Image (spheres, rainbow, N blue to C red):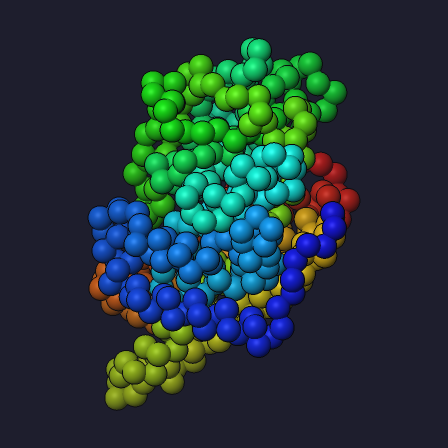
Amino acid sequence: MTKTVTKSTPEELEMIRSSVRALCERFPESYWRETDEKKAYPEEFIKALTEEGWLSVLIPEEYGGAGLGMLEAGVILEEINRSGGNAGAGHAQMYTMGAVLRHGNEEQKQRYLPKIASGETRLQAFGITEPTAGSDTTSITTTAVRKGDKYIVNGQKIWISRTEHSDLMLLLARTTPKDQVKKKTDGLSLFLLDMKDQKDNLTIRPIDTMINHATTEVFFENTEIPVENLIGEEGKGFKYVLSGMNAERILIASESIGDGKYFVDRSVQYANEREVFNRAIGQNQGVQFPIAQSYMDIEASKLMRDKAAEMFDEGENCGAEANMAKYLASEATWKAANAAMTTYGGYGFATEYNIERKFREARLFIVAPVTNNLVVSYMAQHVLGLPRSF
Ligand SMILES: Cc1cc2nc3c(=O)[nH]c(=O)nc-3n(C[C@H](O)[C@H](O)[C@H](O)COP(=O)(O)OP(=O)(O)OC[C@H]3O[C@@H](n4cnc5c(N)ncnc54)[C@H](O)[C@@H]3O)c2cc1C
């Protein structure tokens, strides 16, 4: 892959941080608490991010974006989560288009990227997971069968987030049955499904979850996709998805780092202010050590995120680094989340203090977009050369 991004100077990176912080100040924690309570989509926040161009930074300038790199994109998401917000409502608009950018043809890029950059078209849904396949993506059973100039899709997806707030879905489906391909990763194809005007051929059902994430089940019944919406070559979709997954993992690591910094910031503040036994609770090593330990872990995971982002932008294979960044950041942040709960004592449970909401949100990154067990297994098998366990 050729290098296409402009690398920011440290000053420019700092400017990105401070501009995103300024935007986030318009959306205080009370805003996020309310959207969480109502399980509402933070429409106003996404509109503000879109208007200021933050969701289109990864799109090259020739297609209407800023042409920035993965580190800059990561910093944006990190600052959103550090402010007490939740970038999950908009992160997919930033990176899902990477499949079109890296593997689409010029006509598809011209058709979609400028509209995604302006926010006129929302590509917020990424449809991979299925109820029976789970983490074993090559076992998905949703099929796309070519009939003339269309593909007819049948099957079911689960945990597909933001479908109700998106015009398009990037969809992975099987185009050749598993028993007719040499490798199980062959025969899967990637499509851009236009979800408008699908009527009864597409059913979307919200799933009630412990966090506000607008996630859904999606049922396809003879859903039609025009042939021109196939991304790249038929049967090569799994390979295309993998390259996008590295970007997703680097960005999820960034959100997680933002959450981790939030927990550390809040814990330090509260531990300095709260007095019990006539002294600040932060004076007790039982309170200060877990905060300091998680701070060190978060800083270390940030270095791995920075390395993975730089490699991605240089067009190098960053599979190991992207996975390590996601793993290290989510584990460090989970430690910080627990340290914050310890620091806040009973008040950690009160919604008014926001810690419990962020605690629930931070837990997601250990599970999605890939579970940490699967990351460890990837490292063991593909990086260290240990025997395959599945
Ligand atoms: C809020 C939310 C939003 C999501 N959004 C999306 C989305 O937009 N699009 C999308 O496609 N998916 C999405 N997902 C799905 C997510 O990627 C999956 O939940 C995740 O990949 C795990 O799959 P699973 O839930 O089926 O778990 P399973 O695969 O059933 O695994 C269950 C447990 O078993 C462990 N396990 C399984 N096999 C092994 C093994 N061989 N070795 C060790 N441990 C193993 C796993 O690590 C896990 O802990 C979302 C999930 C959630 C919760």
